[in-house]
Image 1 (tube, rainbow, N blue to C red):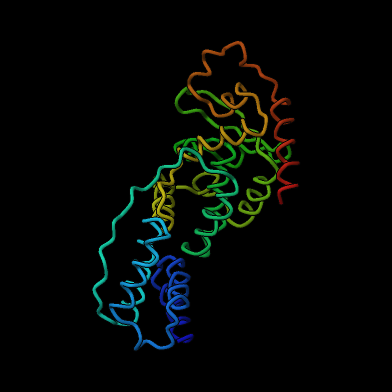
Image 2 (image 1 turned 135 degrees about the vertical axis):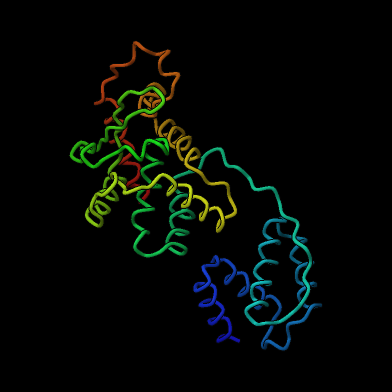
Length: 272
């Protein structure tokens, strides 16, 4: 049975199917004490699904049903399973940095080609730490970065004006590594217009969430506000349109922003 499980894992990977199915099947086999393929039957599976339905959420139960369906497909066994009741996909208002590291980035490691992993992870982290709009990424070039000062110049497309975003050392390390890995061709991250959408679509497919660039933009604001940055500074870096109502703060000292980012650097070092 162990050999079959190992083969199933490789089959999932080759078929670009999410790895969670493998872990669900390992749990299924452990809970049902299956020792051979011959023991798998419709009654066993249905009894197991009824049992876990008493303690697990509907979405989790559906994931087990999907996992068992894939396992049966791999084994070439024809068994009719209960229909899934798909829960509504929650649309998170924001996500945390921990969620990025524990869920989003590992998903990129598992489901994206090796040559794109560093690039895509750097882009996701850049969106989180910069608050940049998806459209703004296409017009950022490497000459716009000042890595000594941890800053980047971004053209605010909506207001048609320039803004300076200061980012923490955590992001700087990723940017330096990616810039060394791939030379600039079209723009700083060598992005084409639809690349971000494709990245998010694949992440959503494997995590069952509604992940998109706008969530990262909102998360940027929440992250900095929760770490002590003044709201006016956040609006200045994010380039929200209502910053125009705060015209007398236009010359907010960039050193004040850098001071707050330095505090975040220290927090991240303690976290790591």
